[in-house]
Image 1 (cartoon, rainbow, N blue to C red):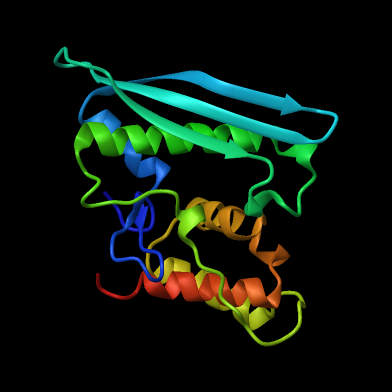
Image 2: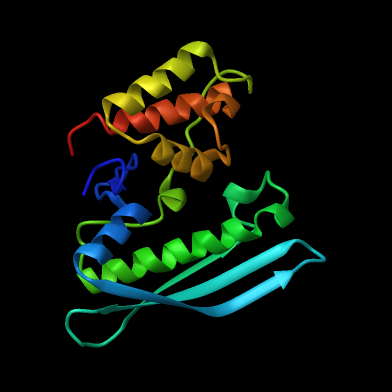
Length: 193
């Protein structure tokens, strides 16, 4: 398990959060199979409201035993989707709920909830910065890339973090305030746990 890729720390929380790549690695290493089923599905195309609840059914393939269930829910009204058009995020909402159900199930079947928490996007606390909402500076852009390289966080993980925090898919689209918060989050990975 690699910090910044499989799990990561969030400011203000003593336990690292388990990320999707880490949950997938645990499933592979412990020979856990996963099946998904939709528990609840609400698609209100007239009003742009989409809500999904999914159950992830996990079982060990190497030894028969009971199935452990993980549950997750997600909807288009969550804060990270507020600035996006609701009709363009249906697939994102569905993927998010699958991820949440998977991580919940993995924490249950591996008994690792004492080691990890989940849902980094729910735990990130907003940070207030002075200054206007202007584009990221060249210095900030350089610092983001430098920090990611220093703490050995893969670019796709940084991209996932930006999507979760700001609904931005590239560092050049960050505002100055968002870049400051991202730098703050990356600096956390430099600190020993």
